[in-house]
Length: 387
Figure 1 (cartoon, rainbow, N blue to C red):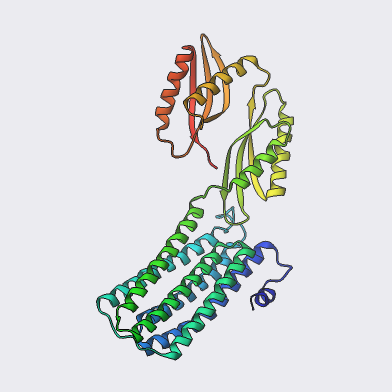
Figure 2: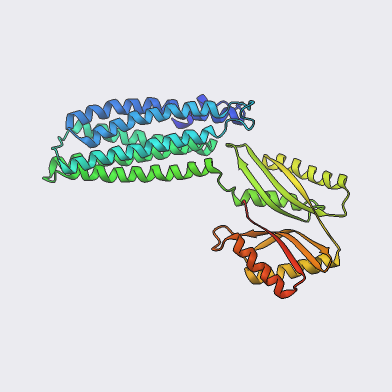
């Protein structure tokens, strides 16, 4: 069934943006049909058995149909082309859609929890119905298929919204199995609190799934750090250019899937003429765009090479910094003579979460340079890495 639906809806000639839209639409429309069907069945079963777990599960399916509709809308908006107000396109709408789905999951967990606690405080009899049990087991089968279906669509499209829908379907499987267990325990044992306790446990499971999704999606929207693999690939391509000596300050911004904007600083020999340096930078930018699909802007930093004095002071600086903390690094180093004083200008990279303020680090390092040579005047700009 899964392969048949993909074959019918996703044409081979679709370009990647169009294909992503169609994957989202396929997931959304399939989910709407399945969830509305399950909602009607479970509502009937909940009414017959007087089970809050089953009735809540029916409402959950109705909510899921709404989130599936949101997925369809998000898929259509995310592939809209760039315009005056959105020069980087609308790709992040995919993350907004996933955020909405995760909020729905979270809210559903709260509602299930309230119903479960109410049942614990004021337990009611749950009627057993073989028809209802069959309905619930069919629902589990449908939701398992939907989880597999959306998981496969997510792998094919890398659409985060579909991952959220998959997680939602798995949560529904657990809640439905729990509702069936509560019905059986309440009907065939004197333990009347089973429906409320199991309903509350399911609520905690759903809440955790919602919180995990909220964290992941929020991270994307806030500006998640790029993958180490992507950063290393960018560095590798840049350093393969013979006129680039080193790379630092790589910054990566993601404006939705397949829309990555980056910038970096490339150290080039200071004695290189402007046209040659520009040609090297231009070649690297084009290669990164071609191989990685990343639009990158590279800033050249001139570095003095074969300069004895500069190398002398660079080694002194490296020694002092490594003695202070081996996890620190520095770049953009310049040694500038000013009368008796020598200004050592450089940018210091401080690891994230370091226990001291930048101002305190700079003060302590300046003291270390002074101990080495009172004529050394370090001018330090402290920063954190962006990757």
